[in-house]
Amino acid sequence: ESAAMLPVLLLSYIFFIERNKKKYVLVLPYFLIIGLYIAVRQSLGITETYPWRSAPEYVLGFLTFLRAGLMYARLFIWPVDLHFDRAQEMFTTFHDPELWITVFAYIMLGFVLWKKRKQLSGPVLFFMGLFCIELFPVSQVVTTIGVRPGYISAAEHFLYTPAVGAFVLLVLVVNKFYLFILKKGFCSSQVLRLALSGIFLFLMVITASQGLNARTSITMFRRSLAYNPNNTRILYSMGIEMANRREYSQAEHYFRQALAGEPAHLISQIALGRSLHDQEKYIEAMTIYEAIKNAGQWNQLLENNLNESYQKAIEQYTRWIAEKPNNAQLYYSLGTVYTRRGQTAEGIEQYKKAIALDPVYKNALFNLASSYDAVG
Image (cartoon, rainbow, N blue to C red; front, side, top):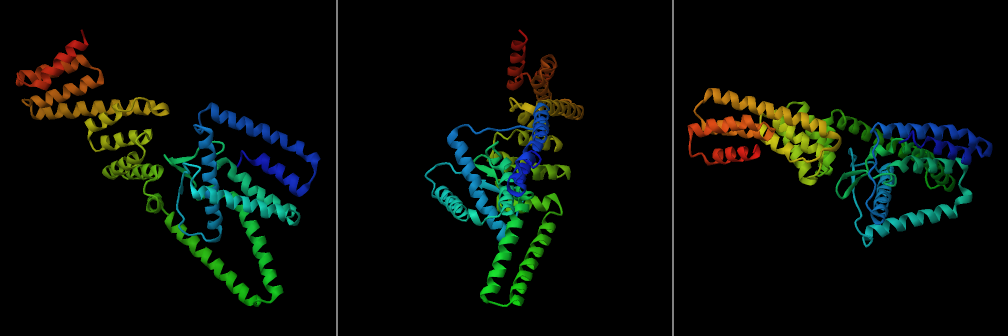
């Protein structure tokens, strides 16, 4: 996203810092390269956009991002409750009081900047622009960036590049405030320096604690879930981490939690099926996979996983039948697996064996009749 905004950032630099109109033409190649880069990504399916369904939703999504912007401003001054993939609840109506408080806050900010516009230097305007330009790709204007239904992503990692502009502005403001305090004689320079040292020490402690929280994916995800236990993306990621550690029952738990909040989350459905498969619950895995009608870009993965579960279930029932050759239910269950896989002839043979052992086995009789019906 930052690379895509580079040409705009260069234009901003020329406009506010160099003020040389002749240099605008030098930026054109960057626009062409970025345009080609985006086109290639889209043609390869690397970049996907998810537009809003209606104009009111579009506006509400952008206003929700603006509310997140107020939270960003607070984080620069008081960086507490930091966690990965922060979510912001969507405005769902224009009657929400918080929406109008947000609008009022930005109107007042715009009013103050307009009144002070002659006092704002080129570098100040450039770094203000840098902050806004770098946040534009995640502003919900280009595409929706959701965490789960009803929530947009407002993660702190969006601030990495925009923070350059914010911190420069913060330094300029603090420096001006520092000189103002000294000029008015409210306190000595030693007291001010001591206060600034305390602020730096606080920031160093915060940085160290964040480093500890990010030492492993598990600790980072757990911290996020402590603040937002319904974040579908984090729940899914936690499940993947557990699966990588071969803790498949825990992986199943997190995938089910993700699906409880977002039942249509396809990749969590497939991952849930795989976690059941890895626990040798092949029939349950097949049921999960078969319930997915269209997995889109994950269709091949779904097909491979489903076929693997079919094969493993067949092998499992075959092994059990070898141990208990007079168990009609095992033949019946093996027949259902064959039938579900589309191997109707093999299914018929297993139903016949089940009925040979138990002539009044109703489920086997019914499935045998259904299979005969299916083949005409």
